[in-house]
Image: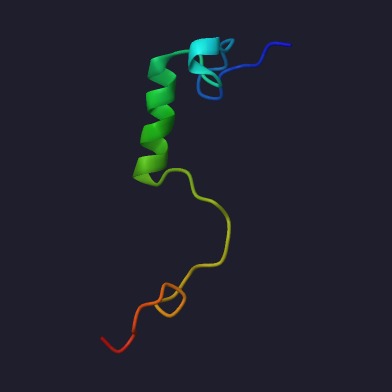
Length: 55
């Protein structure tokens, strides 16, 4: 069973799985670091984050 790279849809390479190459792995990492990928959920306020809203 062959899987495809989630970035470019080419067949994956075992060395870079689930990607096909180092390039696609770096593209994915950059998307995470830049905030392009967001997990669904409720927005947190200062109290949820343990911050004092008065300061």
